[in-house]
Amino acid sequence: MAAVGNVLIVGGGTAGSALAVLLARGGVTVDIVEIAREPVGSGSGITLQGNALRVLRDLGVWDRVSASGYGFDTLGLRAPDGSLIAEIPDARTGGPDLPATLGMNRPELAAILADAVRDAGARTRYATTVSALADHGSSVTAHLSDGTSSEYDLVVGADGVRSAVRGMLGIDTAPKPTGMGIWRIHTRRPKDVERTDLIYGGPCFIAGYCPTGPSTMYAYLVENARPRESIEDADKPSHMRALAEGYGGAWDEIRAGITDPDRINYTWFESLLVDRPWNRGRVVLIGDAAHACPPTLAQGAAQCLEDASVLAELLLAADHLDGPVSDQPVSGQPVFEAFMDRRFERAKAVVEASVQLGEWQLDPSPDADVPGLMGRIAALVTERP
Image 1 (cartoon, rainbow, N blue to C red):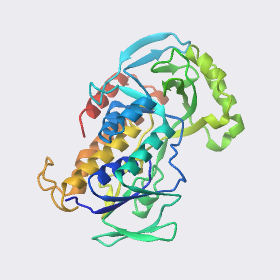
Image 2: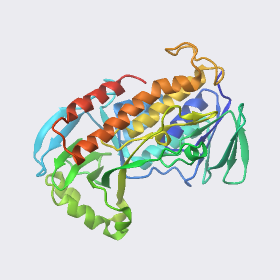
Image 3: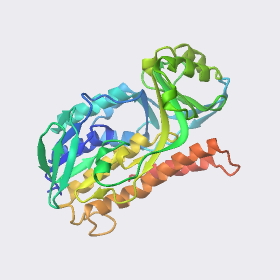
């Protein structure tokens, strides 16, 4: 018997969808409320490391993800003129039977997860969110934006980096800009682009790209953060093309395709880490609502998926939230304590390392050990949480 019989998940993104699939498959009644009107992944492409792919395989969607995306096992380093400096084997953090990395279109991943949620028997209500929560100790009443209310054994805030649920819990931790901004475009893939190649130097801190399918990719340029309000939509292509002028090789073809402002996304790098515990009573945060990091290690989605995997495992293994989870390292731990012991330090290490990589670029240090830091995180996330 699971620790909960019915659960409300606020947010139908990566973390919320994954948790819904795993809980519903385990016999829990699951409702999702999602403020968007349809399952649309924001942004352009997404880079999924092996430990993210491992959870997607556990969800039963790996075949569809593999068919929709583009997997690869090496990382290239190039000079600004496009010449190859090094080709490095990438860490296969999901195990030897999964690619080291897979790129795909965000909306395609969102659609695959939405189908998995439906097939598992969970229910999603779009254009709906939570307006208030009342924790009674043994249950939580959720008041929804459509005027209805229902009672649940558990409410999960998986509503992203600007989580409304986090505020309802009285947690004032907020995302912090790191000083960098990133331009992304989803575009046609040049035939010789078959993996992520990174360029450090030139007009930007980083120029890179990631294939997302047989004919598509997303490319990105990382610069000092500029005021968001200073960028008019119509000017996005000219801004991005100007930055891309400093790069050759595949960037010559990429630059020629930077014309449509609707295909360009500009955001700041931000970081967030809510201190433990991530719950207040029977309401708990997961994913970007609890921790978020700049994409310097491409671990954001992976850490969201790991949260969902671990929390589902614990909820399905315990008889009640305050009771022991018998197979945990510390006998007799209640669910949320066990969740924090398995997730907090790991997520903290990823957030801090992701921020550190950016700081070394903003303020170069002779003591910077980029390969060492990346190797330590790869070793950490290769182990199951």
